[in-house]
Length: 120
Image (cartoon, rainbow, N blue to C red; front, side, top):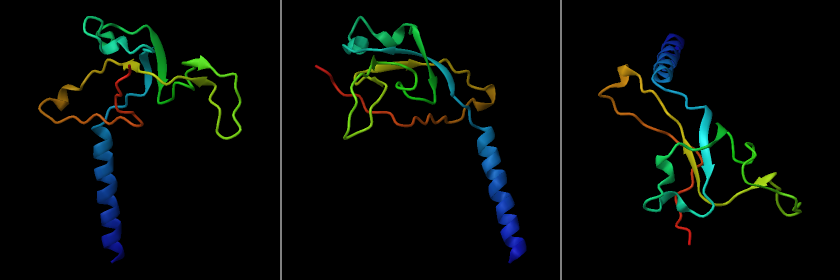
């Protein structure tokens, strides 16, 4: 029984190692731009087609990156952000896909993304 548990542990850890070898970290500096008026998807002014001018470190938040309006208010009933922004924002990053991944399905996993909302 003990040998079986050790064998299973070895198999699982080798499978996790293989999966880790087939991943590509996207952490680092990304191009970034806020879009307070929501023009980014307007026909003729597709912001996402141009090279964005600012940058931000990911993983991280806009607040950590100093993006948005500095907050001077202090709230008692909730945490206070140093910077506040609640409109569309654009992120860009060029990625080189390894040649060994050709003809393979590739999954892009994004955390904490909010679904697009139409703004008036």
